[in-house]
Length: 150
Image (cartoon, rainbow, N blue to C red; front, side, top):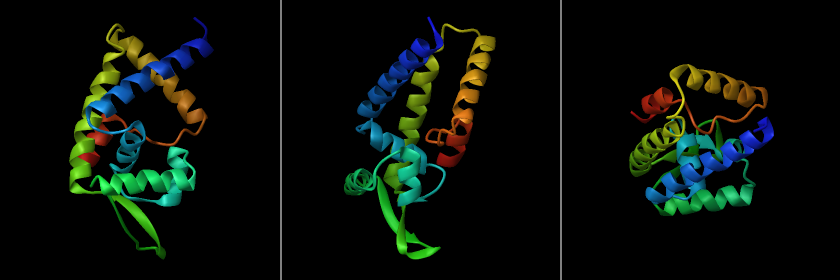
């Protein structure tokens, strides 16, 4: 299998696992992404839009639905009185902690047929591709996410 086919098919595989985990936790994929991004800290709407790759209207709808579901709240931005930041609620933090841990287990399981050395090599190569292409941090390392959730 060539690199293009492997990357595209791997992307579909990870997306399917992520979607299944989100669904099992009562979330949409985008809500799961939003909650994971907010694990370490609140963000302003423009920052969230850039990180999630969403237009302003799509992000506003996502945040509005997440507020109605009690997962996030809007709070004043201390640096700009006209702006708001989006932060996890207690319920949102609890939901994302479970969702994040479960999703990590599921995605990790995709590599169960690899040796530890092969997993390290895969992580190193994919990490380089991600860093070389300036992919926003929408999902942290398992140890970083656990520390942020705790």
